[in-house]
Amino acid sequence: MTKVAFHTLGCKVNQYETEAMEKMFFNADYQLVEKEDIADIYIINTCTVTNISDRKSRQFIRRAKRNNKDAIIAVVGCYSQVSPEEIEGLEEVDVIIGTSNRDKIVELCERAKNNNERINIVSEIKYEKEFEEIKVDDLKEKTRAYIKIQDGCSQYCSYCIIPYARGPIRSRDIDDVINEVEKLSKSGFKEIVLTGIHIASYGVDMNDKYMLHRLIRKISEIPGIERIRFSSIEPRLIDEEFMKVLVDSGKVCDHFHLSLQSGSDSILKVMNRKYTTKEFEEIVNLIREYMPEAAITTDIIVGFPKETDENFQESYEFLEKIGFSRLHVFKYSPREGTPAAKMKEQIDGNIKNERSAKLIELGKENTRNFNEKYLGERVQVLIEENIDEAEYMEGYTSNYIRVRTDFDIELIGEIVEVEIEELNGEVLTGKVII
Image (tube, rainbow, N blue to C red; front, side, top):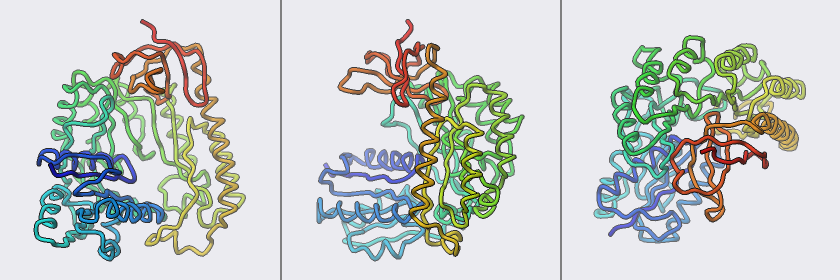
């Protein structure tokens, strides 16, 4: 049996798309093996958010060829979409696909092998108008299912290459999403995570600004689905009407990942973000009004061009004020092809390190303060896996706190009540209440 291995970099959307491509090969009678194994075909699903992402992709391309010099190497995804000529310059690569036409992956790999042919089908993504249907009806993850509902982004933040890699907004048909969720529910999934490149834009290309509202309502009516979660969401989507939809569904998780990126209004403007800190704070307050236990997490970039000491202090104080339950801190890295990379006022690496360290420490303090509130409380936990050689079980609350409890393999996939006894780092520990 012909063997195929995948290596995936980047976001949850990439991971979803990899699982869809794996299913295509499985249906074509290929054997799926691990990326470190010797395979006949290697698929590298790439990310291009940073130059480091590009380098990691090239490293694995070379490693795959060393594993089997006769293997077919296919490179797909954002890096090959943005830099197809660069990928074509790598002699190890046989097939190049961008962020569309991935439904042809099996056919193209077989053609390259049978005809000893190099193939590059990367097309101009900016002309794409339709959502590409690549479906996942059987997932490796057996407790939480990621559902891709849209592709593309039209925000053009000054630091981001993704609009050039993913193209314009394309929304997935609601009925198609519902059909996939229904199948996953019948397979035992209780939690659905809605994901995409910019899910707040869902429906915008169809002139339907309430399309996401309707999708949430429909998913909440599917028997067996007990939780609906967003992977990440644009702050400006959230208003009172939207929050009412979430609460009325009774199933949307009280966890919101809102990418702030900076707590300084002047830097937000340079980043071409479309809100102010005042507007962001009002959104956070609205969420907490409707969902008092909500965990609000965020991404922050430090050392962005033009970020002065004063700007950083503004950002630090804003983060303190909001009290995020988790901070994901990134040191700015220039991405070739974006406006920010051309800005003259680049920040010294040592300053980036200092600022990053301060925010990481603040983030740890915030997380500890948020989690400590649950000591002695009872929480609902979706048990997902056993760890430490089957000594414990772990899962997540609706507001995405990791919880550990005693081992019981039959609990995997079940939502149980846990009484919290202690906090170990960022993990709550407790006992299941029968």
